[in-house]
Length: 177
Image (cartoon, rainbow, N blue to C red):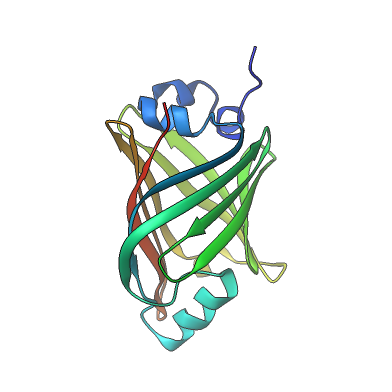
């Protein structure tokens, strides 16, 4: 029997409700390279650019191919996103029943929910430079995945009051099998 993936551990029975391409992607084990298409939006202000730099996010508006490298090992995954002009890397791990993503100077804690239409990641905890962020200061984050024939569609957006959008990108990946 194949061991449970990171997302299966966190989501439990909700995982089985996800569309087939999302289940296929989130059960990949070992090293994989996926390709697709992405639209990236630039940070909206100077403070947003600084924060984007701190987490390794893209700085300019672009459209083009994306190469996504996945290294999945049970309760840990490394995601390397090769955008048209920037590479962004993060590590996802299982901590206290949540997914924690280390992204540059930030450590983000997410709760996951799944429906037959999509996967949603809700930010519930954030540390920046090791300092916990109070709830009133946490960014508004949209992190959703949907699916169509053999494709995982993603939409990511993070913004802060008075700062604006720090990062945003959307597109799709071709999912094997």
